Length: 308
Image (cartoon, rainbow, N blue to C red):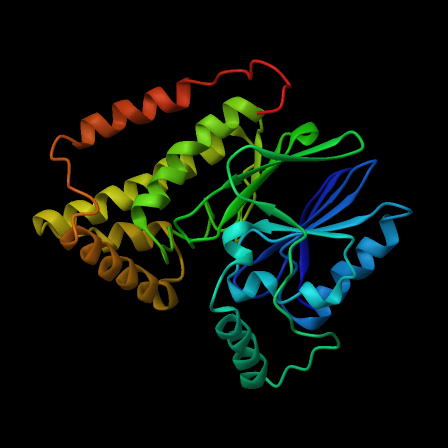
């Protein structure tokens, strides 16, 4: 088994698959065990389940799915969850069979047999707007819609632990993979400091790569993601060549990720032609650096512990 635990403390354990450095996060509180996006291979998923069974005691098990990419839902059938959380858009997808077909294609290609049913998750709790909360005893969970990567992405903050689980945003191993909308992706990134100000989280767990264990770490990743989007827009709007050499100095898997970069270019060029975004010529390097400085300096404590 190649899966490893890349982070552990008294409350949080992050299992990382050998495939795509995919993270599955288990959160233990006095009231509940949260399992977020259990993946990839059958032995890896069953290892997570065995760990959960060993720590749960009499606590309920909550499954949380940050979005519907097939690699994030394929462990659903291995858990007999007491409650399942996802976005309303996740539950309303009309292409669920296509997503399940992707799992079947993967398993067929590599002769994988899963000892549990492969099913599309059926959420019990739907996140339909920002700030939706759920309480289990003294554990408070706050959810935020996060479209852009996919149309149905969401983030979750575990208030007491100062922990944000962000799905496929701010991944240390990936630049933005934009399947849905660069405009909404940018809006989600712009919303993150507001989520922080409201919830005061310091640690952020992405869907792939290493967790960001400090405020400066996830803020830096956010700036890098915005810089990628702005640079690609500048290239599309002005014809200035995009700095691919610089991109691959930062991200180490160009043979595979080049396809995602090209797909981003196609999607954003179509958005530009449709007038969904305009290139701001005044977004110069100096202006962006000043914006970066302001963002990293502006950290505001939340006003209160009140619900939104």
